Length: 204
Image (cartoon, rainbow, N blue to C red; front, side):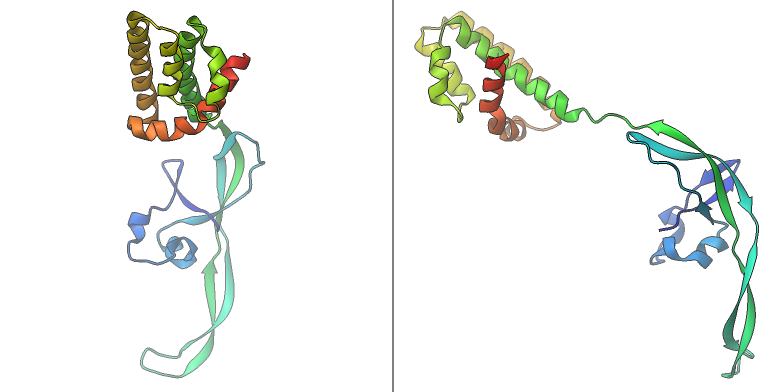
């Protein structure tokens, strides 16, 4: 689809749907766009991975063309005749592009690190009580309760258990803040990766 714009205060202004309420497919309606002083943009930027191209320099090419159309000889007549119609075919030529680096989507990395922090804190408790040997039997369907259960079987102290639960609660709140969801939402994703995270952390 051809892009259209008009120059306002030395800047390109693009069509807004609010200007064309009730008009179907306004972005392909060339006469309607030209009536509102929008012109086609001509020029293609070079593709650069990780960058978005924005026009930085341009000029208007004023030109016209003609074509023959069958039109009524008068408003009240049904007779048609060939009529030469002058069309505005002006356009905006893009001369230079500015390449803007796209923001890196690190949302998955942030979430993954937050999830690893939760699992890592529980693993630290399990490791403290030499309960890692029982992990293999729990994989790959390991969960937070089953992981804490390994330490409990080894006689984890109330103080250590409470400290771990407190730390995990803080890390859970951090994960929820990063995800912008409830713990149930976060857990739906974490439980699918829990076993893999445990295996990954143990191999480090």
